[in-house]
Image (cartoon, rainbow, N blue to C red; front, side):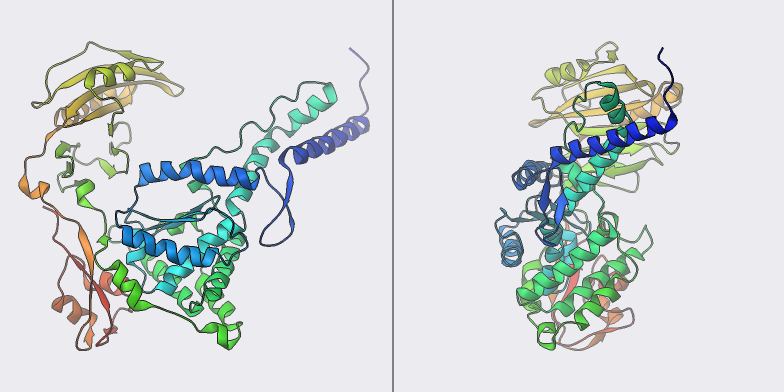
Length: 499
């Protein structure tokens, strides 16, 4: 062992090492000019890489979330979006605008110029100018490279955990290795990045600028925030709480702040197009709420899928959810789960073989008996995980041109308690034969024009439907206790309650 060095000498060495590490990191990630601010910005990717991330994510988003099948509506959103994108700081990006087939009230942007709005948020807006404000906000996230900045911050946070090791490597002559590793991969994971409050404020301001530059009335922008706020105040069991709230953390005074920004505009810039009639014509007939054709749970926790004509009963009391690519259920104690997914393979034999070929899975004896008249293979299994051993049962079932994988599992210490419930659920998978379930139709927005002024309650009675007067008021941006004016286009919802 050598003689111990003084504390001051070690501190100076560490400071030099840290400085060198930061120089190395900066040289690796590069420095670019922010397109909006014009200021230098340290980022992890070039514009070409940013665009590629968006191109890689787009097919995943389409496959997992689904695009709304209305070509005319898609073209309309694209026209509005491209009109503003052309006036932005980054008109050269390969801008794309899509409607997602989701009832959640949401909109989001993917790096590179890929913008998405849900049919849920479209149903809750009242004019093309409101649409422009939402799309303009998302364009702002792209032009200011907010997602790229968030990715950089995350990577630097990860690097920060290893700065001590970087310093030791520099001081001790060790290998730097791949310090940065892979940048955050493309795909739908980019949707879970959280924007900072400053990012949101900047995107609001940019959206206001873009919509004004495109000739839209900026005074329509606060209406969107007000509608989102009203929905977020609803009780969970009654509300379709906007997912915008989870990906767009907004301060309470967001609506008031943007109103104050509008007041600062010259009088001539506070006016512009609203285009209520054009917008209402486009959303007339749009699906409202979850589409039961893509599957729904009834009051007995039976999952029905009319489109693919099957049903499956989940245990009573379990929390269930119909997701775009799977159906899941979790026990009340959260110690067991069931998942139903589409297998990639074309027959039950190859699907079962692929599943049991996974590392760490041990299967029991195969059961090749039909399941409720359907070709099937099922087996018990155990799986070694980092958290311990899981035990469960899986079944692969053919129905039409599809192969379904049903899997029920629980930690080993709770499996025996849940085994019967899991087995019964998997065994319940069968063809759907109930004509009421097979023939369900989604609710849709219908635009009507009352010939006389009426209260919200009077409108609900004159135009009955599956939602109440309060929800109609939010949908039409009318205060509770307000009135619908004669000659004004109003949205109602038509459809029947699920069987």
